[in-house]
Length: 165
Image 1 (tube, rainbow, N blue to C red):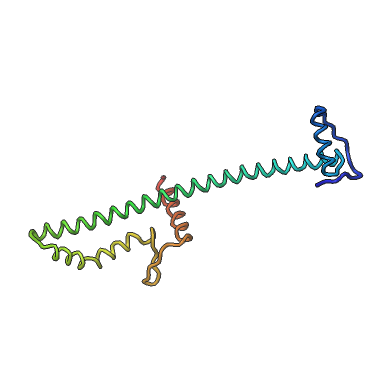
Image 2: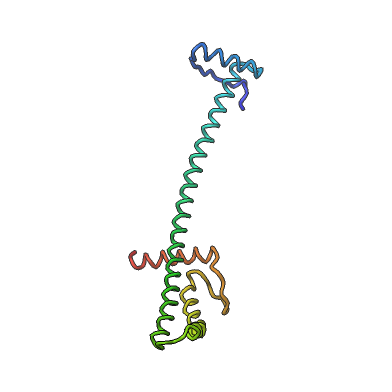
C-alpha cells in the first residue's frame, strides 16, 4: 500500500459529517492518520474492482469452455449413436439373412453362423472406425489420443471447407 511520501498531492472529497466521523474512528482503531486510512481504503477498493473484473472474465472463459465441451459431448454422443445403430443393423441383418437363406434353421445354427462371420464383420468395423475412434500402426490398433482427434477435426474442417460446407 502506498504510504504518505514527500511527493504527494492534494485530493479532496466532501463526505457527510457522519461518514467522515466513521472514517476518523476507523483510522484511529488502526493507529493511522485519516489521510493514510483513506489512501489504503481507496487502494483496497481499486484492487477489489480489479479482482471483480478478473472474476467476470474468468466466468466468461469458463462458460465458453463449458459450451465447447457440451458441443464436443454432443458430437461424440451422435457418433456413438450412429455406431450403435450400425452395429444393431448389422447384427439384425445377419440374423435375418441366415433365417431367410435357411428357413427352419435352429438357434444353435444361427449362433454358429454369426460366430463364423465375426472375423469378416470385424475387419469392416475396423475400417469404419479407423480415423474416427481408433488408429492403426504396424498392424496394431490404438484408441485415438487427443492429438489424433485434433488432427482429425482439423482435417474434417478442411474437407468441409473444400466442399463449400
